[in-house]
Length: 622
Image (cartoon, rainbow, N blue to C red; front, side, top):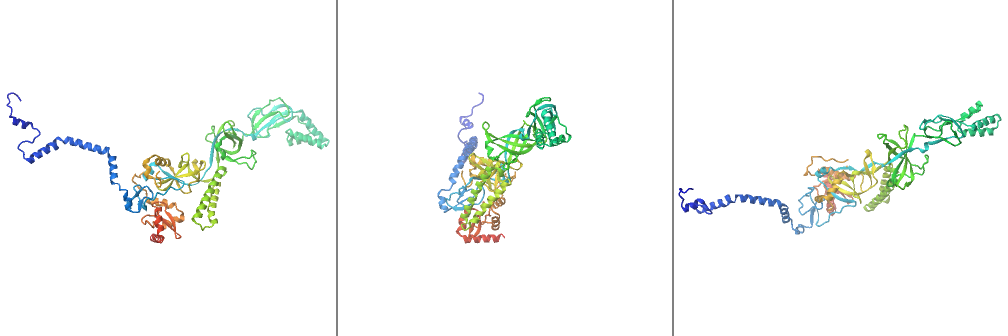
């Protein structure tokens, strides 16, 4: 505004500049709307946006606190349990899940709840079971769980050691001069040369030979039979064959040289003399060794000594001597396997190496095994020849037979003693026969979790449900296709399925992850079935597969009866096997199957009504 521009009046200037007042000329409601528009819609628009952002941030930060407050406000009062009555509803598969409403379902397995008396403690784990856990199909696929059916497998104990090839001492002989004289000719004049039995080695000139041959001829002419016999025996002792002596008697010529022959097929290991050398009686001429068989001297540690047989002696014809099959490989022929037998175990232990030396005899027809070289030896000991394993199995069978006999006596007091003792005796007889054939009840090495104080195997009771079982195992052995197994001495039975792949993940997850505590049931603390990769986290277990697996754990006779009944007589909407392995009861001498142990009290409370329901179920599903 310049100096020439006229200034407006004071009132007009105030109205044009504005302020915290409504424009003049407005009615009461007009002024109210003006103030609302000014304060809310114009001036506080940005502040309102910022406030909304602050509120959203606080909700995100304090979300867990808000959820905790909500759960505390909505949680039923403790007095509601007493008001609900004397019963509560729990999940048989997850006893930690307890509800008051019978129409609810288990949040873990989505199964209907069962009724029990209020405050009933959960059933303890049976003896030998360390823990129980249930995993969803998604977790089973994620862990790569595979199972394997426990069965009798042909097993052998393998002891692998390193030894050195040596000469067979039974095949080593020394050729010596039986009479003194001069070596006029050596037919074998090289060390290592191959010789055959009765082949000439050297020609020896001996004056004593001439005198003895002349005495032989003189004795025949004079018919001195005593002198003739003495001369003949002396020539035979010097190594002259009978046919050669007969030639002397027939021709009447006295020989001047003695031909020294090889006593066997073999190689000249050492030559002691030279051509033209004078030798005395008994002087060594050659060392000949037979390499058709060789020895391997291996060293076995003290831990494996109990698996070796005890040998009475080293005599090859000893009846008490045991032999074991052995396989050997050498660095010179790594792809060739040489087979032989373990023939002797030394009676003492080396104090320095704390090992016992074993002797293995290997055939060597092509002379590929050269003394002085090393060999890797694998000793295979079948179960029937393991004294320690036989004694352990005998003790285990005796213990199981005693437990089984006691159980039969308690369950059926009227049974005869002969019938009660028949099953353990047959079981031990069958197991002994299988042992003689090399068959042992075994589990793969991958199924065993060794904690240091105990060995645990996870057994599949139902699809997705596993329990850790403490087992007693024998020494690690080798089965078909060189798979490592452990013989089962106690804790498992034939036909049960154990986890072979993923057992360490199951054990580690249940022990280290507190969030998996809700998957336990009954505690608060592999060739197998392959799952499909299309399983989702929300996918439930197939109920039909679960029922089939549960019924398969019954005996054949009980399984047929359970399939005829099909449903539980107490909870008629539940199929047998849908909750767990059906529980068998004997009511008035008739077998009755229940879906779970929670129905036992109701079934026994009204036995006649229970039997009537069972008959009705059988007729309805014929």
